[in-house]
Structure formats: structure tokens, C-alpha cells
Image 1 (cartoon, one colour):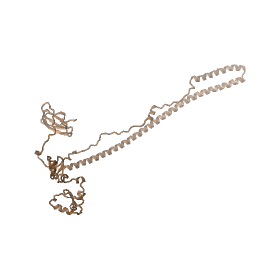
Image 2 (cartoon, helix red, strand yellow):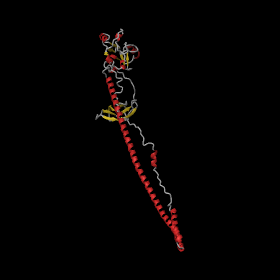
Image 3 (cartoon, one colour):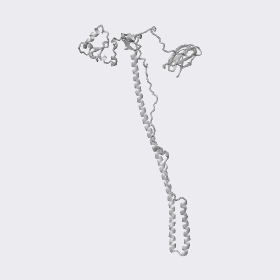
Image 4 (cartoon, one colour):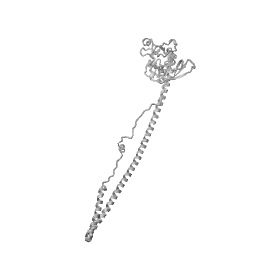
Length: 397
């Protein structure tokens, strides 16, 4: 092809003429203009070439359009396909690297490639992957909504707790304020009564002072003599009263005390109300993956007879003996690769893992004949003796 993009006719460019390509020939690997396409379609060597329009050719993905029909090593056209190496082969490739390989004619296998199950499987896989992505996005969106609702719920819980704490602290504050006022009123009443009592005796003392002064000034000697005895007795009573004040602790200092509960200090020492953490739980979304990679190796092949099939020994499995000699009459392979064998002579199922190692043996009814897989943990067993019923046996590992 003269132009890298294929936008010009390769035949015309070879003659130093520039004309836009209207068609593309994959076998010639070059663009063709309208005039050259008529000759291309009529020529014996190219009339069987499948020509496509340039508009359609430009729709082909670049990675697909880059697939060449000629071997880059030998510059020969590919004619065969090696299923063993999954490679296209030219005649020289066969003699060098694929002498013992199982080769298929390209002309035969490409006939059904466009409508083969391969593309149907790939398209189905892509559709399922897209559905998986949609489910994942929706699942994450729902998870975000759940997180939002949880955050709002926790914020409400925190505010409600704060409000309850405030109400409770207000109540406790009101109670201790009332207790403080009551204690103050009590000691005030006690001190006021004491002061009133002392004040009454102060009046008595004032009266004695006035009486003694008046007696000394105006009374007769006799009155003064006997009055002095009376005054002395009253003064002794007042002295006893003053002494009683000290002995009765009436003059002790009274103080109010307020001891806050240690739990209140604990509140002030709190550095946080709670702790926020993120936890995870198993996913609730199930991924649907279909056929895994079976489409990658499915290549249309030419029909063969059973005589063309060669068996290869991959592994030998040694089955443990039972009470009688071993009589294997059937087997099945579980999705995990475990192998289940029917040992008819010993009325049992023998289970080995995918590496051929013994796992366990399960007794079954008399004379089992064959077995088939239901799911990873369940098989169905047929019997060769009455009542010939199917029995499901479950095994969990």
C-alpha cells in the first residue's frame, strides 16, 4: 500500500496518479478507487477478493485492521492455522516450526467465524460484564445513601444525647443551688438567734451599769449596801452566761462547703464524646461471570472422526480398596475439580480432589451404578437394584 492511511488508490499511486480510494481490499492490503475496483473485480487473480467500502473499512478497529494476511517473517500468505500454538502459518512456517502440529486450513475455519459461537459468547460476556458494572455502580450508590443516612442518624443521636445531658445538668445545678441557699438560710437563722440572745443580755448589762451608777449617786448607805449584794448576784449570772457561750461552742466559725462530685470532673477530662470507626461487611452483590475463558480457545474446526482422536495420559489416580475388590462403574467431575467415583462392589462413592488425592468415601444404597453432578455439594446416584430410584447425596467439605 502506497499510503499509510489507505486514503488513496494504491494502484493509481503506483502509476504516480493520486486518486481517492473508495474501496479497500484486505488481501491486496491497499485502497482502490472506483475505476480500479471494476478491473479488480473483473481480473481473474483478484475477482474472488472480498472488497469493502472505505467507509466500512474505517469502522474496523485499528487493532483488527492491523492484522495482515501475509507472514512478516517469510512474506508468504497465511494458509493454515495451528490450533496447538494458536498461530497463523504460511507454507514456510509449517516446515520450520509446525512440522508435528495439528494444522487446519484457514479457508475452512474462517467460513463460519463471523457467525461462530465465539463472537456470541464474547458479546454475551461483555453484556454480562456491563450488567455487572451497572449493578456495582448501583450497589455503591446505595451504599453511599446508607452511609448518608447513618451519618444523619448519628448526628441526631449526638444532639439528643447532648440535649439530655444539658437538661440533666440543669436539673442537678438547680438542686445544688437550692441546697446551697437552704444551708445558708439555716446557718443565718442560727447565727441571728445567737446574736439576738447575746443582744438581750447586753441590754441587761446596760441596765445593771445604769442601776449601779444611780445607786452610788442617789441611794442611802443601807440601800447601797444591800443593793451591791443584789447587783453582784446578777453580775455573776451574766458572767455564767458569757462563760456558757464559750463552753457551748456558740462562738465557733461556721463555713459553707461545696464538694462537687468526682464524676463532674470526669466530664471535664473527657477528650471526646465517642469514637467514629468504619467497618466492612461481606458484599451482597453477586457477580455473574459466564463461561470464563472458554471463548478464547474455541476455534471452528473441521469435523473429525473418532479415529482421528489421540488420547494422552495426564494423571493416574489410585483408589483405596474397600471390603471387597474395587468395581468402578461411573464417575463425575464437580465444578471445583473434585472427582466422584462409583464403587459398585463396595456400595460407596469415592471422592478425590483435583490433584487426585483421596478426600473421603460416602456409603450409598445397594448396587450403585452411575453418578452425575447436581451442584458443588450434591450428586445424584442411580442404582442397579430395586427400587432403582435416584438418590441425592450431599457432601460438604
